[in-house]
Length: 289
Image (cartoon, rainbow, N blue to C red):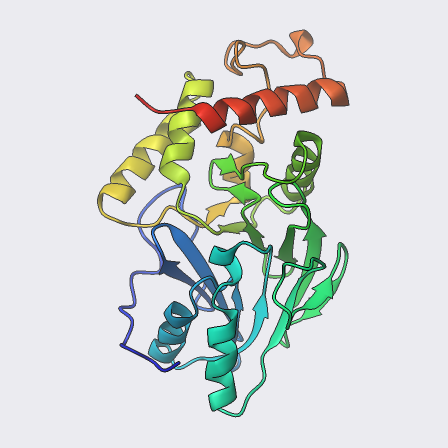
């Protein structure tokens, strides 16, 4: 694989209250219809790591445009739009006499070159350490990577801006536990999710919480940004804690947060799982009017 063209370097920081600013070392690469691939650059060199390379050529073009050298790959789960470009990246690196380091969850469906990592494992990137967090639910072996010092969370398809992933292989209890793990990270962390789903997520959030001022403001911003084909991610975790319906009070559909009284809400674990499952099931069927 070679550089096909010089990638247009879009503005790293589109205007918006709810879109987190990118550091010079963090690069957001568009792929397919709505995927984001992430490149994290060593601030002292041209080396970089990529996260969930569904499209190898898009990352090769991005690396060439920025004069970067991809040295490693982090995989969150096995879906093709998250690891389908690994072979292309291996071939590209081999043509330059290099071998890429690859890490991913322990799962027979993960690319054969990946070194398996588990909850609590640490991956040394050379310029920082990525801690592995097990976040099953979307898939049974899904993991996230968290760089604590840099406050960067690469969460794949577990947590989205204003939403969460579909539960394909896990259970609602697993997904809720996974989201609670991520919600406990530093609130100023950048949530680097893998898809541009924010507008659809916020339309659902506004139906679930019709009187929520921050959801309303975030929805209007997302409408304006997407009308200009501008990205809405990454977000800050504190904004997710304040306006993501799956991280809010997880109240029943019939009792939105704005009108619910804390004393009316059963906070047992079983009740919270039931509320989360109902909310996720509603989202699965939701169509904005």
